[in-house]
Length: 247
Image (cartoon, rainbow, N blue to C red; front, top):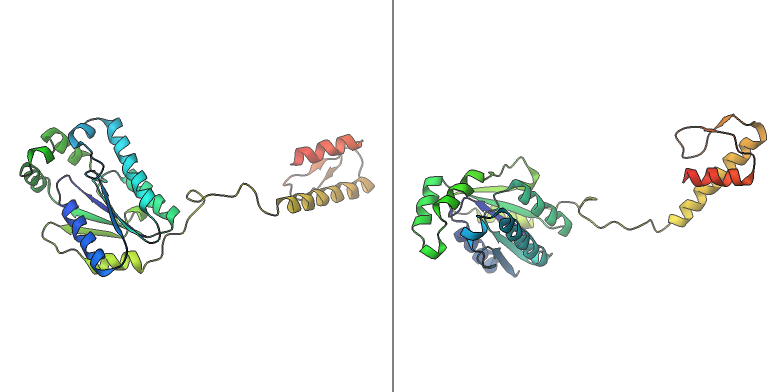
């Protein structure tokens, strides 16, 4: 069913908020709630975020896991940095393809608070200072004016999660309609052969009628063509060549 995208600085409280959301929806709905995140995939933060290719691969793995779990029955919470707006747009397109709503929960903290919380973690869970500062510098804050960042719920460190508002955004809002870029298109229309035959007959009738009154060099109109064509063919082969070129 819906997708909840967590967003924020490293060590900004995203996982704590994701756990609150998971507990709330498990208590108030009968839907399965899945949490997808760096921890579940065993991502080594300091190694992955120090290498652009490894980071790209990690984001692709997270997206693939979300895509596998998103459907019309489950709730999926993506607990990761999600600090790149282009990546958040990809997630938005994913929900359009699945025809399910989504929302963004932005854990807004200062760099100083997040740095302090990082230092208070166990050594194995800490970001190195260089990686932490680099991620904060690269962070692209969400903007509710962007459709892929909307609806946006900004939560400060001491705020109470707006659980009812988030629930309404997920369950009382229509899913974004799919467009040509997010849905599979049929190879051809089911009545393709009928339409092709009809157009061919219309073109032939226009040419046959023009033969009665036209001489070589005259311009004649053909159904479906934006420009007139020169009446220069003399044989059936010329006629067939003309029809082939029109299609």
